[in-house]
Image 1 (cartoon, one colour):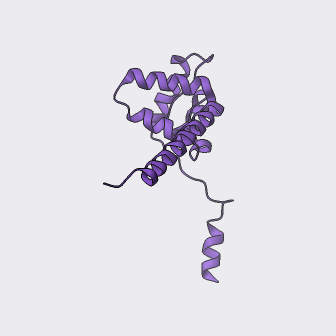
Image 2: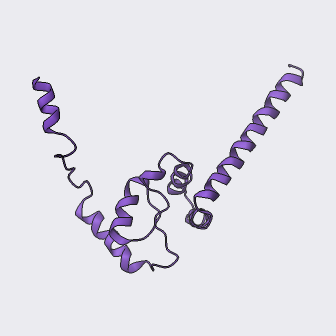
Image 3: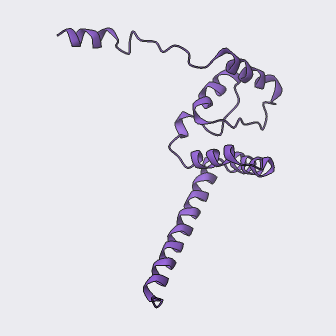
Length: 131
């Protein structure tokens, strides 16, 4: 009975999560509102900053908590790890212009290409003489 009381005491109706972003991060996202024009602008962040950015500066994001399990995560992760800023900028432009539908179309193409490659490897393995 005591266990039930402690669970009830911390129910979703009484518990409020404390902010998890430090003041400096929030300040930088606030600055984006004045630095980045409202028209044709999109913020590229890792998913955990997406909703906060939209809330603070009103700019759309390429990646947020609602898209963390989509193919967008792959593209954003690759983008953040790119050594070439030029390639990163081109990829972000593609993501911004293509939107979610474009990302899904690209992911489908990659999947089809991977399946074709796997089929070709299987056929070569099957029909080529073993050395």
